[in-house]
Image (cartoon, rainbow, N blue to C red; front, side, top):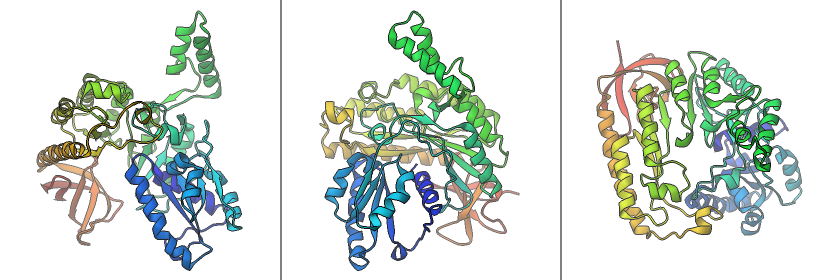
Length: 461
């Protein structure tokens, strides 16, 4: 998401006469796009700012700015605490950057962090400045309103709002025409994507007002407002996926991230119909304990989650499943932890992002719960999850040996310039001898060996 935002910033500034540079010693302005989802991410930014002070002492005209979620979370505080920061800009204020840079050039310090209910940057063609020319991201929506107890995103990225589907399909088509062969549709919760024409919005808003006022049609109106039923020009995520997939059968389509409560059978059916929609779903579980999930405000139970896993296996038997999990959330007991381990054993994820709980300011957890699991216990539980997942991933990959996959070649292997790497539909990396193949091509690769993280193969005859 931050990479996609940085490409939007790059577009806004280049159209205003600025030029991007990869050489930090040639830069007049250094913009750091930040994440606030864990404390560790913010501490890395603080360290980076300390490192930049030496450069600024040598080149005193260089201005440093903080963009994104950390800027939104800390606002004016950043300008006061970090004396080498000249401007901070929240995720919805990037259009104001050209004017702000002109002012900070003259010595002012500026902050703009007002969140928007409507900003999607749909009209901006991102600058693809840090890409392999094969894969690209398309941001289809912004914000989140799930309000998970541990998560700062609703407070740093604002209300959920979706882009016009026509602009998304157009961006995918333009990327394909430029030679890109894979796009990933991005959103904090892509499953809840819904765009409605103006008349549809009005009807939905009317339904909500009736529900709030106690009108006799309240229940019906509220249902229409939530589902988009009866609206004109309503487009949900399954239809959007289908439209993007129809750009070309040679364009692979991925998406991230899904919320289990919104993963519909309709979406799974669309994925099954289109070979170029990749068979990989990232479905964060966060915990295997029903009590902890309720405390997290995740709005599903372990049974519901496993039902969604069963649906994926039914419609997409060859689909890989990845997840996020938090070890040591507030009040987590050993029984809760064992429930998480059991969830891993049942689902058998292909990959997982695994973290210790990090209390974030201003979240529900920070205001109402106590971070009462000792750090050494968090660490031990996290290590147990990592060890189990490593064993499962290795077993899963060993089952891939002998299979042949169509691989989109992404580049040269880091270990040898005589090898290439790419990913299959299941998002698994496969390394193989390059021969006459080139990045951007598709190749049929037979898996011959594996590690827990990588498949190793050869070109299939």
